[in-house]
Image (tube, rainbow, N blue to C red):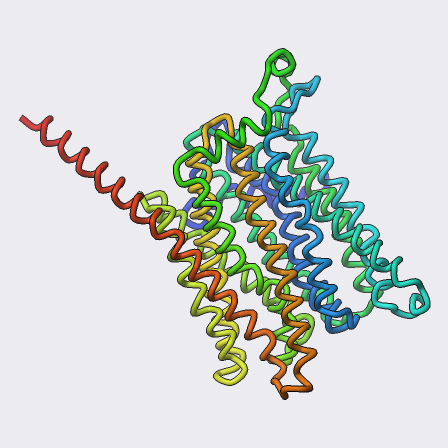
Length: 480
C-alpha cells in the first residue's frame, strides 16, 4: 500500500497542543482538531492568493515588467471591489435554501471556480499588459481588460470562499466557541501565507516569464485541490432543515442589517476597523517595491518579506488569543495593536538612512504584530456584538469593511507614490521619499483609529469594573 502523505500530515497536525497552536482548545470529541484543520485549508488557498497578488505580482509588475505603480495599485484594488458584497454573501449563506440542506458549501464551491478561472488566465494577461515579447504590438485595451477580469475573478472567489468558509466553521462548534474557531481559521491563513511566501520566493529565485506562468497556473490547480479537501463531508445533508427554510420567512437583508448596526458601539467599531485597516493596509502595495528600490532587495528577498510580516501577525494573534481568553477587552487590545504599528512605520521611514536592512525588518515584524492584535481584537468584538443567528452577517460586515478599506488604501498608496515619483526629477527627491510620505499618512490613520476607539475602551473598562464589583458583592452576600 502506498504511503498516505496527506493522512500522515493531518495526523501530525492534529497532535499539536493548544500551547503551540492558538485556539486549538476549540476542538471537542464531536468536532476534533483534525477536522477543523482540514476545513482550514480553504484559508490556506486565500493566503496563497494574498501573497501572490499583494506580494509577488506586485513586485514583479512594478520592477520586472515595468508597469506603473498606479496601474498596479488599481489592479490589486480590483479584487476588493467585490469586498462590500461579503456582507450580502454572509447573509445569503445564513438563509440559503438547498434541496440537500446545505447552506455554506454551494458558496464555497462557486468561489473556488472563480479563483481557478482568474488564476488560469492571469499570467498571460499580465504579459500582454506589460507588452512583453510578441505582445508589444497588442492593443493596450486587451491587456488592461484581461488583467482586470482575472484579478476581479480571484478577488470575488477569495471573498466568497472565505466568508462562507468562516460561517461553516462556526456552524460546527458551540456558540461560545465561535470566536475561537474563527481565530483558528485566521491563524491557519497566516501559516498559509508564510509557507506560500517561502515557496514562491524559492520558485522565483531565478525569475523568468515562463516560470511566472508555471507558478500562477500551479496555484490555480492547488487552490481547487485544497478547497475540495477542505469541504469534503464538512456540512451534513439535512433535508428537514431545507424544508423548514423553504417554508419560513427569513428577514430581508435590509432588516437584518438594521438590527446589526443598531447594537451598541457597532457603528463606532466599524469606523475603527476602517481607519485601522487604512493604516495597516496602505503599505501592502508598497512594501516590496520599497525594499527593492530603497534597500536593493531581490525578487526572492522581497517575497520573503511577506513571510516575515505574516509571522509577526501570527504572533499578534497568539498574544490576542491568550489576552482575550483571560478577560482582555477587545477595544483596548485593538488600540494597543494600532499603537504598535506606529513605531513600525517610523522604522520604515528611518531604515534607508539609519541601520538599513535590520531596522526595516524590525519594522516589518512590528507592523505584523500590530496588525495581528488589531485584526483579532476587532474580529472578536464584531462577533460578540452579533446575535447567534447573524454570525454570517457579522463576519461579512467585518470582512467587507476591512477588505474595502484595504483596497482603497492600496489604490491611494500607489497613486500618491507615482505622483511623487514624477516630481523627483524636479525636486531632487531620494528614491525612498515617495514611499515615506505614504508611511506618514498611515501613521496618521492609526492615530485616528486609536482616538475613535478611546470611548469604547472607557465604556468597556467601566462595564468590566461594574461586573467585578457585582461579583464581589454577590460573593460577600453568600459568605455567612
